[in-house]
Image 1 (cartoon, rainbow, N blue to C red):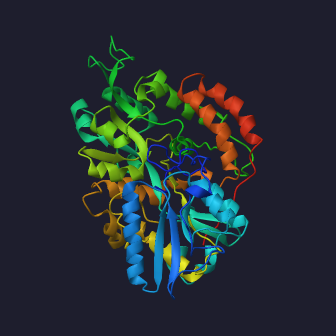
Image 2 (cartoon, helix red, strand yellow; image 1 turned 135 degrees about the vertical axis):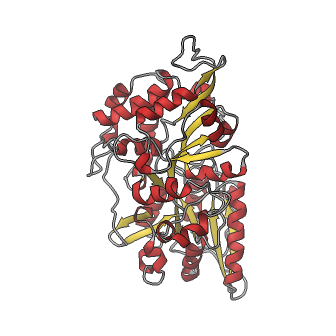
Image 3 (tube, rainbow, N blue to C red; image 1 turned 45 degrees about the vertical axis):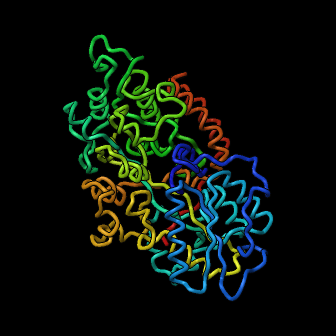
Length: 466
């Protein structure tokens, strides 16, 4: 889906590869025919405006998007929309289409590509439509992609935040109280570790703090927290009063004591406390979070809100908590962009489609748990909130654990605004892997990493209130 970064600035096309960029082998022969779309391509039959909507996602998302497009056609009789489902090699295919002036009208897009194309004038500045569409100007402030004063190439397709998921039955069996669902009652990091100890068992049923515990034969891990997922550790950095870079966006701060503390604590979960799986223990083809909770391989997991879709469809008795905190409660909000190409032959209809495609009234991905809305009213107005969370997919604690948590404690992922993220990610990822694999202590890795990141930093893209 269009919401899940692990390496900032790059879209991941599958649930297993959160925001990893598509391969580079695709050529024009692999592309769908886009006659009648944006750019200089020829028009189609009759007086109907013919649009192209290009997107990635799971088969479930494909079904939901196609249903949404059908509703759009039903509502706007003079418009037809061709879905261009592109689950693989998305960036490569978009680049080829843009180069050949056959870009779609509306599309999903990763942040880095969006900024580049917007600066080249290839994307519509949607700030021009704020007066025509008041709802467009009333989205959560951190969901916009600003590339200049009063210039935004779009917003997130949907919002997402990081949460703490757990198996209720496992918690009950271990005599552990579930993670708090209110930010003000969030566990401290130490309380989180203590709970993970009680939830971890080796093959003989022993906990890590019991004599005879075998760390090489663990049946059930208390927690799973990815070191490579920037949106995971970014939440903890902010809670600890730390940050990836300074306010100028030109100095990396990962070697500062509070940042080092966060990364060392994450490494310690695996190699000191033995309450979280190492990459080797997790395996190269580890099941999704919902499966690991259902099979009781993991008791608690830090993952994105989008996991709710799979959770709600599985048989696991799951719950949602807010993340453990160091100081102030904090979570990270994120999401890939949706854009309108400036070469569209039908710009007004394309913007109408942009407004329609992620409206909770027309897309069931909000009620089903994959997406979170963008407009503020869906976090503040009780009736609007109920319209998307009052159903079987959303557990009772969702209102405080997610809606209130997002409104009051979410900050936008740094990768959404930091310039040169693709190149930064190429340097950042190997360093995170060294921490996650336990090859070096966090301080050594981060001290060596910071000068490399500093050389790549170019500042922030702007931010403003609509």
